[in-house]
Amino acid sequence: MDFEKQSYWHERFSHEESFEWLVSSSDFMAVIDPLLPKPPETARILQLGFGTSDLHTHLRRRGYEDVTNVDYEPLAVKRGTDCEERAFGDVRMKYVVADVTRLEEDGVYDLVIDKSTVDAVSCAGGEAFQLMAEGVKRSLKPGGVWISLSLSALRFSAADLPFEVEVFHRFPTPKLKPHDPDIFNFCYLLHPKPASPGELQPRRSSFMMGLGEAGAVSSGLKV
Image (cartoon, rainbow, N blue to C red):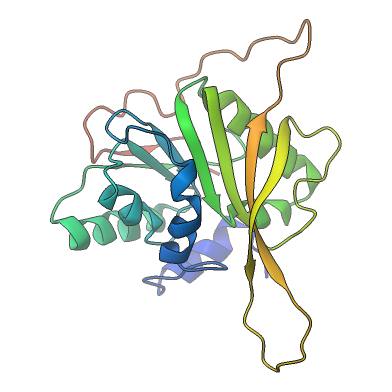
């Protein structure tokens, strides 16, 4: 599977209406609810690689409307806005076509969240993963966190990762036979490490700026 390639997702989303990676959005939300920023009316959330998931609608049901949903396949925007409109009758969240390895906004979000997008990015190698992690760190406000769902127990084991890492929850995968070994998907909670002395502050960028009204669709940094 070429999960790191836009062509794969374009072909897939051309016929796929809905799919949840690793666990359902309802099960995921039940676990991460205590970690969500409060109050929801003022919280800003960035979801990376939303694809054809309905996770964004679960966030809105909890009062989170300042949510920016990013995917580098334009067809995902159509799927995402249609999903929100079916659920609520309108579109209030933001949708952006952009590459999650080129995030350049600074200090904007209380929470960055991804549901196995980090696994797809990692298919392109360690450099792509590191670029994603560094971009996420830049985009978080002071006190902000990254919640990531991954199939790998070693996804965030790199020594130079700019985050403190905690496995917040393990989701058991279904067994085909009673005596099959236990296999888990992992929910990570990541806190940015403090900047090292002399570390340059990231520059401001036009990435995802000027989105304007809720419900806006923007082309950010396309692949």
